[in-house]
Length: 114
Length: 411
Ligand SMILES: Cc1cc2nc3c(=O)[nH]c(=O)nc-3n(C[C@H](O)[C@H](O)[C@H](O)COP(=O)(O)OP(=O)(O)OC[C@H]3O[C@@H](n4cnc5c(N)ncnc54)[C@H](O)[C@@H]3O)c2cc1C
Ligand code: SF4
Image (cartoon, each protein chain N blue to C red):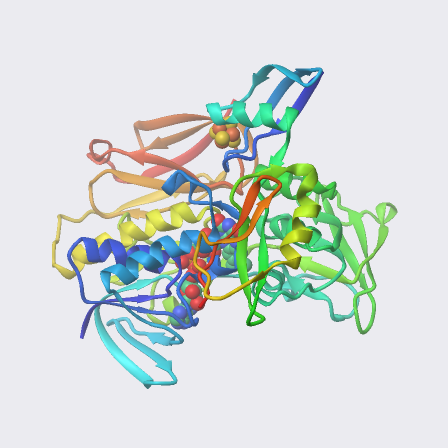
């Protein structure tokens, strides 16, 4: 089966044409760099996304967060539910882990808050 | 008297400050009207920044922090919560804050880095009253990401610029339903990756050649009528469709914020709405430089930082009184290439010229001539208005140039 994908790894957004059979990638065309190939393989076999959002702090404010690794795409909604329940205790620095091990990734702060 | 005053503490202002400091000018003052540095990046919490510059994917606040940390480490002075009111042609900067009241600073050089603002919805002609529930995408971004407040549950977005696409995903993740993104043009102004990961991932339809023809509701938005448009961008009556919604987001483009440039008598370009600059990002007023989104709208912050470094270095040369032999080579375009930055070359040295095209073109050659001879020709598989392009011209190429002419040749 032929699948058309848009590579989301960098702003170039190459159009990829992938041959897949039974969850096996046979051929990839259209990638400008090797990262596109890695993306196409992952997208066909186990699609993943990085989630960015905000978490409430104990003073009522917000701090921006992300998953430090991409998580399975079909877990995005569940991941958001975890993020929306979490409360961060101030102070928070960039890189601090707010919630551990959410679908194999940590939720980490991407902002400094005093 | 100050050596260098920088107006705006966004990525452009911070990079310019760091570049100037590292090139020898230490007496620098950054004036920022917000309570923190970072500019608009503070509300852009999604990732996709810095791939070009740092080789890693950062979120907006993380990208901003790399620069803020450096500004602090170098001890560059910043006045926050300080609004600049006026800049004069002879580089007197008038500003105000609650501590110092209104004050004036004479600068040797000024860098304008005030960023851009969103085109307002008022500029759009849509029938119906103006009920509550209509926001620009950037305002919605601020509400959701900085205040934690979701502006609505059922959303239609007009315009497919990147901020609109990013907000479609953001609001969906926070539990809203985005019913459609309508784009007047037959193509999206946003990046392909954002259409994929912000719309396609969530099955949000992108309706190209569509617009909102009527907004329904008196107190609060109750719905919109959308329609397909013909080649002349006129709505086709038979294609009208009603969508119930409580919120409309506009993502119809950004425009440089140049009130201060005007007060300093800086010549502005009718095309970019930013200053006309030379290769050093110096404006028509000597010693006043411009960079970042106030100069022209960038889609990638990485290029903002790069441009600001050029301005920062050049300001140092100006302050130190280095005067190379100066020339005046205008850079012209054929219309398919909509504009270039710089618009004029005043020194013969290697120079990168950034440009945007006016439509989507496939399999084209970008040609640069000096009026007679072809200096450079580069093939591009695809160029689009949403994506900034660049070419580098070598010093030798400028040797006999009286003008530079940029054109796009289709096969
Ligand atoms: C709503 C919005 C969302 C965006 N989202 C993205 C995105 O997702 N990805 C992306 O790559 N780009 C995005 N951009 C573009 C982004 O703005 C640029 O990439 C980059 O931030 C531009 O940097 P800058 O320093 O030129 O401007 P800005 O970041 O806008 O910084 C300008 C600074 O100048 C200050 N200022 C302005 N006037 C005055 C004054 N009179 N006195 C004192 N200070 C002043 C402002 O407060 C601000 O801090 C977005 C732009 C907007 C408007
Ligand atoms: S294939 Fe490489 S160059 Fe193309 S979009 Fe993906 S990462 Fe970017």
